[in-house]
Image 1 (tube, rainbow, N blue to C red):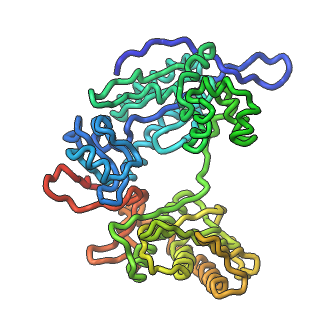
Image 2: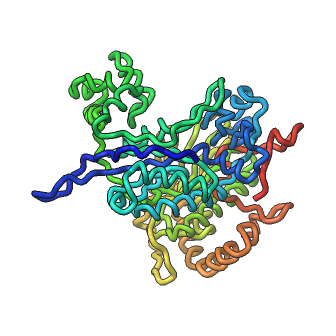
Image 3: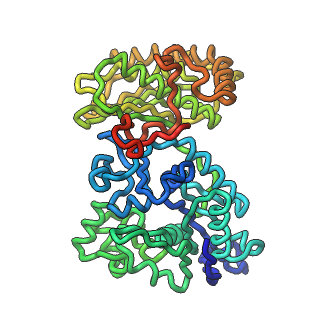
Amino acid sequence: MDDLPNHPQPEGKARSPGSGVPPVDRVILHVDMDAFFASVEVLDDPTLAGRPVIVGGAGSRGVVAACTYEARMFGVHSAMPSSVARRLCPQAVFVHGRYHRYVEESAKLHAIFETVTPLVEGISIDEAFLDVTGSVRLLGNGPGIAADIRRRVHNDLHLTCSVGVASNKLLAKLASKAAKPVADRLGVHRGPGIVVVEVARELEFLHPLPIEALWGVGPVSARRLNGLGVRTVGDLASLPTATLQRHLGKAQGSHLAGLCRGEDARQVVPDQRAKSIGHEETFPSDLWDPDVIRGHLTRIVDAAASHLRGSELGARTITVKIKFGDFTMVTRSHSMVTPVDSAPSIGVIAAALFDSVDLSKGIRLLGVSLSGFGATGSNEQLSLDLGGAEGVVLHAGGDSHGPHDEVDDRMFRAGEEAERLQQSWGGITAAVDSIRARYGHASVGSASLVGADGIRVRDRGESQWGPAVEPKGDPHQHRNLPT
């Protein structure tokens, strides 16, 4: 790692409450790992170093989750269809993602963060905001802390990250993006690694950026603003707030009027819990056979329930998501009075929701999500009276079913069965979790998970970027690394 200059500490705008209290300088860092998934794959297999590596679904329905900068030289980027990425970079090495490895490295990364400050807000598995305002007296100024984090990530994890330092979250995130490496047809260009936005130069940094750099400016908003002759954040700042409100709506207009002046009062909020937990899978070809699809549903439910229990949560609402071969989609949900966390109890609800769907168009994608979190426990008395339960069926066409129709009756019966299973499976579920924790996820499971090659459980993050394909031709063109 190169030695980084000791930039002057940026001064924040936040003030402590109360009269006579001097301003409190806010120092916010945004740390973003460089090509994280792909870098972990290269870390585990050094023969991939310097090659265009693409992590994601290698099949025709796959998408790119991440790629090395050597792949970005050819125009490949995340969320791109894998078929397009393969055309742009035929020599790319496709690696099916191993989410559990990324979680392991992310945990090590957060352990580094937590030695710097308790105020760590994880935005995703590979990026976080850190409020180091209270750490500067002990650890030095913001740029110095950022440099120390980069060195530790490099020395301890053998990975690289980019860091933005500023007085608020908006500017820190934009600064970390400016600190990253850049790849084009001429090669990979090393970024500065750390970019500091000093308060006195905030607008100088912000105003030349394109309007799409601001949170809340999507394609629709950008087109409207382009119609007003607005291309940069500086152009946006020149417009009266009333003009923005008239063209974008009062809320969004006011929001962007503040952002284009570099104003962002949001705090770094640690320990944010997810609002839902779920898994979904895209299939290599459309599925019609209900028995085959139910087998996949069982695996997805088992994975979601396991993740739910690992978070020490129960869920009241179970949602099944189905995307058909023609790309239309339906979601169907049911809410319980009492949270559940066992795979059988969640599965009976998911199966009932699935059975209400017409499969005549073939299924391209199947998913299950759990929400409405609450605590579960063996000492909790579960009510069998579902009169207060909210049975909800959502359809893509907007159809809804009344409380007394056949669908609602089916869900009522499923709800009763789910509560019975939750009570009877408490001790069994705990034993299964204990065995899996010691011997691995595939060590034990229900009979419905057993196939010709043994127990087939679905690991967290598996197939979320589309299906894999069997390797053909050059063994280096597609690689599933061992787990």
